Length: 151
View (tube, rainbow, N blue to C red):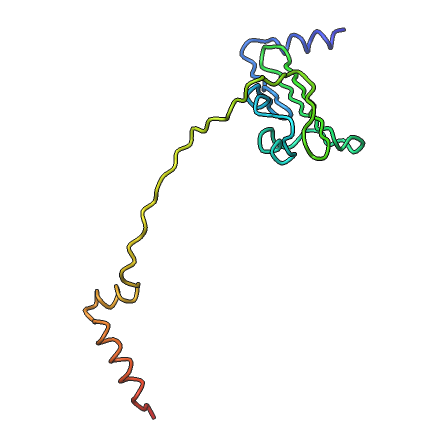
């Protein structure tokens, strides 16, 4: 009895920091609203992520669980099970219900066009141009040096 009272007192002391512990897959109503009958497992993974539980005995059922215990609040638990036949979703059970109207996911990302690099000259041409040697001079120097014998 004394030990239980100590833990209660220590957990409720003001100024003591305690961590919020989250476990599992975060499940939102927006994610559930995107699910439709006939979706493939791959499409479901894209929307929901990989399932929390992969049951060996029920390969056609995926379970998504979420649990959080916010600091100073009550424990939150959410669960949803997706059932498949022939790798297509046929049923949803759990704490969420899909809406009747499809809700497309809106992306806040923007695209940026990168201009092409101007590659009029190669690196060698730029170096020789900087040194004041033209391509014709460099090629004639290479030809004349290859004709000379160094013995």
